[in-house]
Length: 331
Image 1: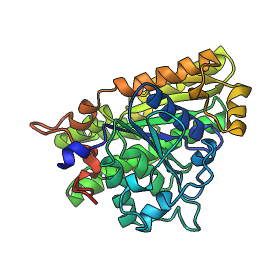
Image 2: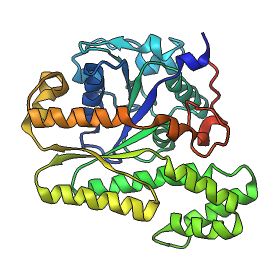
Image 3: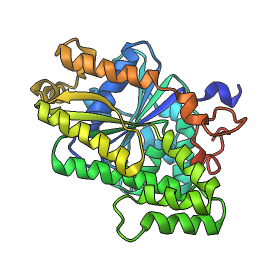
Image 4: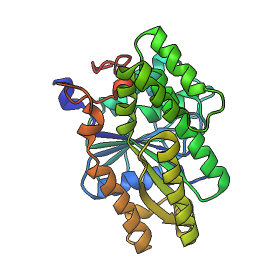
C-alpha cells in the first residue's frame, strides 16, 4: 500500500494554553460528534503525563496506549488504539508513566510521523497545557489548531501566549540559511515591540522579500480556530470576538470563532457519568454547537492549508515547516 493511501485525512490539535478550560472535553466531544456524522475518527490523548480521555469514555483497561507506542511495545499507533462505545471512533490512550512528558526529539518526530500516517478521515489530538516544545510541536504539526479558552483573563492570556509561542516556533524554523535565521530570530524577539510579527514582515519585505513571502504564506494557512467554553453571557461572547481581532492584529493570523459552549452542569456531570454529551441529543443547544464545530472542521480546505504557496507542489500530510524533519515514509 502506498503512503498516500494511508495518510490521515485531516489532523486537528486541541490546545488551551492553560489547564482547566475544558480542552479534553472539547476534544472528546468533537471526536465523538465526527464519528456520529459518519467519519472514521481517531482520538489521540497527547496530554503526555496526565491522560484522562479513556476515563471519560469509561475505559478501565486502556492497554499499552501512547506510552506503549513510544516504548516500542507496539510498532504503530493503530495497534495502540482501542475501540470505544461510540460510532466510528477509536482512541489512543495516553501515558501516565513517570517521565512520559519528557520524550526526546526522536520519539517526538516518530510520533508526529505516525499521526500523519494513521489514516482515517480525522485524527483529533488532545495536547497538554503549557508551552513546552513537545506540546507546541504537536499543535503546529496539525492542519487545524483549535484553541480552547474561557472568558477569564488568565485563560485568555495563556491562550494568546501559547499561540504566540507556536507562531514564533514555526517562523524561526522557516529559513534554510543561518544568516536569514538569525535575522528573523532577532526581529521576532525584538526590543519589546508589541507587534513583532508585523514589524518582522515590514522589515523583511525590504531586506529579504523571499523570506517575507514565506512568512506571509505560513501565516495565511496556519489553520487556527477559536473555541469559547464556559460562556455565560453576551459579554463573554464579545470578549471572545475581541480575542479573535487581537490575534489578527498582533499575530497576523485569521482565527475565527468555531464554537461557543455555555457553562452548564450537564457537561460537568458527563464527566461523572463517563458519557460524552455528543452521544446524546440534549442539551440541544450544546449538541448543536458541537455539531457546528465538527462541520467547521470537516469543511476546512485542508488542501489549501497543506499546499498554498508551493508552486507545482503536491498536497502533503505534514506542514511545510516540519516536513524536512519528518519524512512521509512509514515509521
